[in-house]
Image (cartoon, rainbow, N blue to C red; front, top):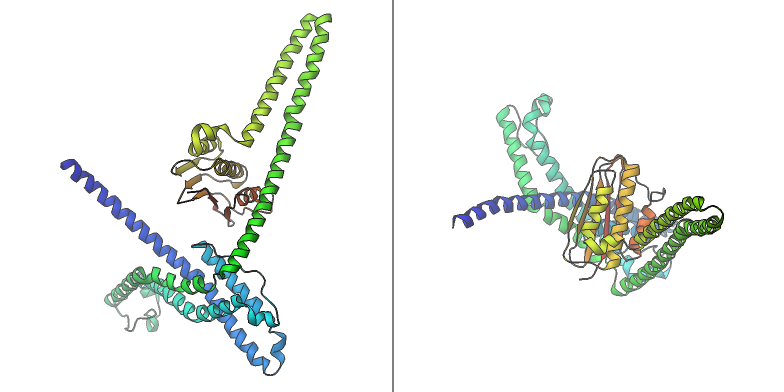
Length: 424
């Protein structure tokens, strides 16, 4: 009984700590959602005002020249919201270029839904964002108010939303109590506000079933083309490796064997030296062949699994690297190979270019998706179009119908997030 009681006592603080961390993360996500939604809500409000002005100008005829701009403006803002919502949940496919003029504008059901979303998000969504963000800002201001209120001018010694005059420390402490109540209010309603703000976008900006199917077909066609390109690139790489490496060494072995055969008749002592050189060349050719084979499918994946293979890459990395793999069972061979090569390329980039002191590789498998996250605390500024190898990583991932997200602001840190389908 004592043992079970002790185990329960130990588990209780750990469970409480996990719940607190999860709640804090949910609150931070909600605040980030509301701030991001505030940006698109301000754009939506500006677009609504612009649309009303254009319609008013149409009475005089001057607005007719600006009418073709409105559908493109609405589509641009809606696609921006789709991209924002895709970062926090299921992916939402962007709709591409909007119709310009004519009957297509009136009959486009997607554009009509986007206009409805613009009206809701530019008004109600804007109010929700302002309420949520204001709660956080005023909570922080009021809770810290007793520390700096004496620095304010005597006639302005009260923050926003405080209806009493602050003349002494007791009044300032009352302001701090109000700030704590605001913080509690955000803890209670913050996540709900974020979901409420995102709901019109999830409802109105999702494509109709037929558009979703046609876009999915187009996406799969592009994925198939990327897979064929990646396959052709891989074949060229293997051919180049065999031609420039192992083939040249085998030609050298053949030449030296011919020279050894001639030397046996004329100079047996010199033939011994040639045999040693031939053996060295043959061993180097075998090493080249092993390297090419490992680049096709590393044997370490079959021997030690994905976790062991990634630990081996981390051990060879020039930067101290931590590996955290938590997956059930094995994934498809092609998926594990893709994760392995992506990690190898990323760790090579970190060692050569990042100036980082630490790196971390995290692998999870929620459901039928394999998630790979590679982080470093380097200088950042990774450019996918600057020859950093990120373009090759993206093409390898997209060939498996996966997704790659790169976050690398100047000054760091750099984060690569990969998502691959791997079956249930």
